[in-house]
Image 1 (cartoon, rainbow, N blue to C red):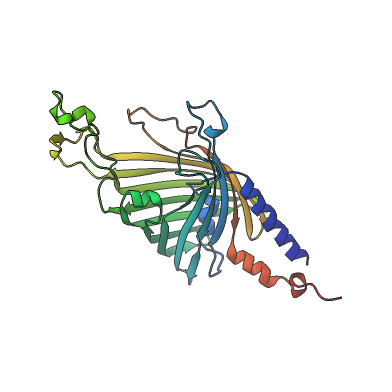
Image 2 (cartoon, one colour):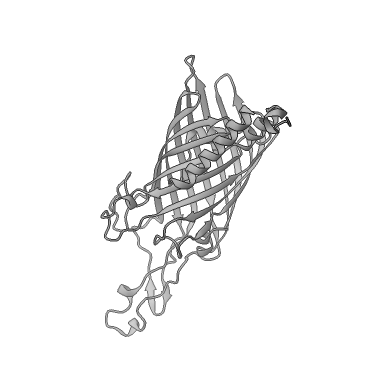
Length: 352
């Protein structure tokens, strides 16, 4: 009865906390990446069910911008993983985000937004228990189930990723985990832009200065993305782990065709534009293990374009994309193990 009551109270408390407090994590800690490695021997090791609530930091400061636009949202994430022997695995991920406020980022109050769906198969080609290292690589397919990807006319996004994870435990009992991860993604779109390359002023071709100043080339989609992530975490005790994560995305936009004419306007590519765009990601987090099957994670993160449209560098750590989050993560394999190992008297009360 003690084990079942402890587990029930843990799940109820952490679920309630996550629905009240903030998040939207873009990066992952070294501890999370290590758990996704599925090294515990269970067929479903590395699977997670997460409930995360977050708020934008700038929304907490009412006069930070000309218009106040606070945002609080809750995300439910399903990330199953199936380990096929000791070397092969298959995994997937999908999330639903419901905004609790009425910010400008969504179309209506209380809107629920689906993410893209990711499916992957992978292999762990090398592992050394003596060195505390292992390598894994995967082939992933991302399907456009989100509104953003549909608006960009994305058809499919195959990618190839590789991850190196090292985890070392000292004689004192604390653990250090380091992760290096890279991914190359090819985005296949129906159209190279998500908007039309036409002047916004009708009839401007009859003006003396023409349409050049009234034209835009549309929002070009990214044909490819290269991602690099480094993460480091330290666990001074078994139930606490703190970590930092940093990464960079390099998006390669579809190039503009030279000499394209639209409505009598010649749209020429900028010779100084490399068609490359960069997005940096940062995260700091603390993870509390309140039960072998339940984790509470809270922290802060930001994801921002490296440069503004005028080529000035953006504020790195505090900007409109900075957020605070609280998340509850349930590890299904550990939960099933706890229920399986609990004595029958703890799960079903006996009659007097």
